[in-house]
Image 1 (cartoon, rainbow, N blue to C red):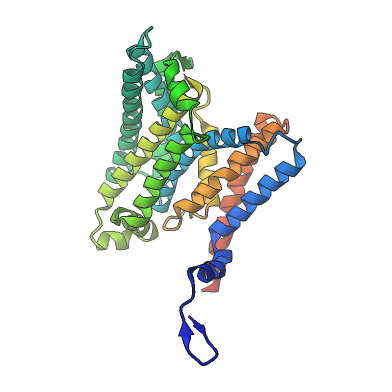
Image 2 (image 1 turned 60 degrees about the vertical axis):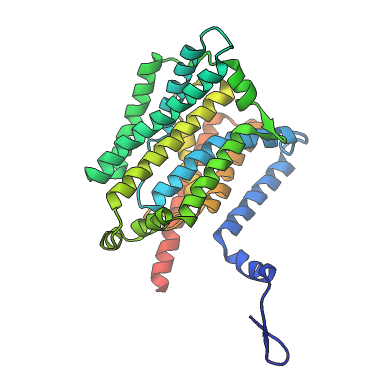
Length: 345
């Protein structure tokens, strides 16, 4: 409320409140860094290379997979957990869906739609299965999330290579790439549209439901949440199932965009970029802190960095180094911020 000349108060408008609170928002400063990064690449790189419609579509397509992985990672990290297996689960889901699509479609395009639907279902269910394994071991067996998901990282990648015979899987119906992977909606890549819808659903779950409220409570103080009557085991089990389902969905995006399921790396770059985005967005690795909107903004920092460096002719290996440094720096900043807040109490 603002005081008028005669001592009365009048309501403060929403625009004024926003102007007062926005500079103190973590999302605001992350967005400022993102804008500065875009401006720097636009100024440094040759004209008509970075700031183009085609490159914006490329960035959106590249961000789609990381957005989905980061949405699941945000939910898990806020709960005080960690899922290192999402890159490998994504690989397994992509391989399983691609193999099913090839088998159902055969040599005919008449079954392309059926092949796509069955393949998509298998891909998501593959992620659900790996998430259920993680959830059972973490929630009911009481094993540490780091150990369980690190084991799943290796197991899922190994299983994907066994399924594919150690080779990348190609030969999916071309209609999948044509009508989904490379298609656009009002100029926006369809994979990005699908990723945004999934992120919005996760954001709603986190911010507007009792499950999301319980997620924050568990991450802040698990013992207090238990005494408050929250079914922690069931909550965590469902959380890792959801994380696995999202990783499987990311695998579908990968197959749709490139018409191939790669088993070479286990998508470790995407895993690191997703975790970096969550930490850049202000989520605390100790749990209880984080918002989905900040993660979304954080996703575009490693994506745009990788894109700009690629256009600038920097080798891919250096791109991985830069993203890794960003992750370490973001974790260090989180620890420094928490220590500063503790000293101020």
